[in-house]
Image (cartoon, rainbow, N blue to C red; front, side, top):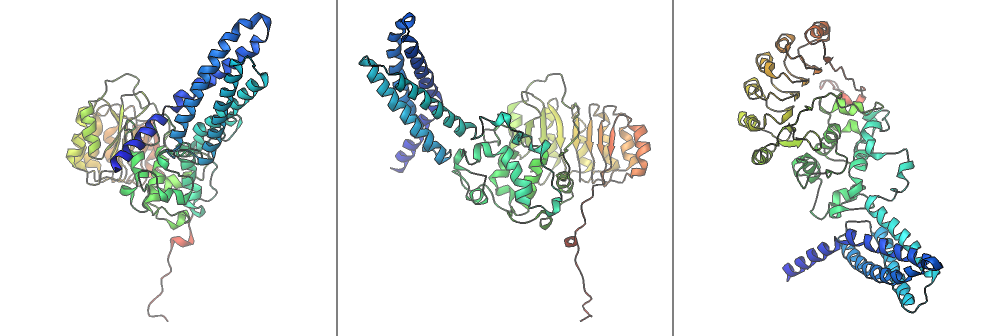
Length: 474
């Protein structure tokens, strides 16, 4: 009995999903019928009167079918109830008036007022349908200066990020720009809303999506780390994607407990997240300088069996650009990195151009497996155990343009081994053994590269220190 109910529910939802296809038919046919009716009032177009009857009949039938499929689709709960209700009743009104218009036509009593009312109802119903699909502000969005999709490029800077409310000032703007279109007040795919704290915690059709302090159990984070060609990846490919900084901020907030009320300074700030938070105080959030690190020449698609094997290990493998076969590998979710993990990349050496191993258990011994990835243009090794002894393995990475060594034990002696890499454009050396005083020497070694020593500074807060008392003093 339960299985039958589930099958029936899935069937009705399947039929309901034909609504976007069916709904355009009555719009076009009924508008055409109204046009023919108005034209046929003139003597030179009286021959169109026969077409009016046919158009009204098929417009009426398609309007009724659109109402039925729309009702079935509304039961999925994926859309705002109030907006759906208005759209539904206006749609029923369109079907009702089309029946009246057809009946009058059959009796030879065409009414210009009925057809005028029909056109008006179609316009209102269509607008409400557009609001459900694209948002209530879609019609006048072109005249608005507030483009939510540019939130990471032109967001309002935070005066003091440490005093900001983590959720309200840092996290919610990301959700607004990248999640509300499908999980906001107007539309709720999978019955999930992300616009209010209580609704985020409630979850959706598939259950809880956020578990404070447990990133691995939070579906919200797991979905954004999936490969873009995965059907469950969020946001969908056709929507604006999360940037690296946005993903890091979401990951940080969830791992810190996903509190909706605490200030930024009340949450643990790792060395990795501090520069990202600090950037929110600037007029622009700058992740990385734009460099031409995606090869212009084409490459064949990677073997899908190999890709699947890599992804099953927890390595996030994604395309670096839409319609590109070049790939980026991110080991952020791989806890116990081994040499075998890096060897998984060998079959996709031609396609792999970006490799992110930051904050992993990488050591000098493992670097030999990276040296054969000759197509690499971007390599992130921040806060790993690599030293001068291993960095020489990169001498053969002739296409390398971006190298992140933040927080490693690399000295200028080790980096000197890479002076033959003429394509290097960015080298990040914050918290390494290389001192800013050695910048001139580095400039001679890498004349085309920007050397970044960091030097990020966060506001010193009283809460960053603790007062200690001598236990002997009363």
